[in-house]
Amino acid sequence: WLPIIIFVFAAGVEVSQYFNIVGLLGLSDISFFRILIGTTFDIKDIICYGVGCVILQILEILIRKKFKVSI
Image (cartoon, rainbow, N blue to C red; front, side, top):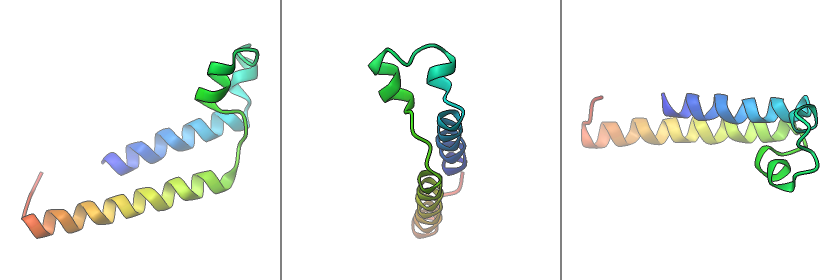
């Protein structure tokens, strides 16, 4: 489940950037929040998060098969 949770969180952050959540919350003057949340939406970021999560899921499956671990 971890790769799915990571992807949903990362995509949620990207969507919040699309809707300019930093500006809507009135935090655009505070550089900490601009850096933490981000200010620029890019669909390529979501694609990269998705690819990374797929790779993580594949590695998890391979490791479970190799060590015969069941959760």
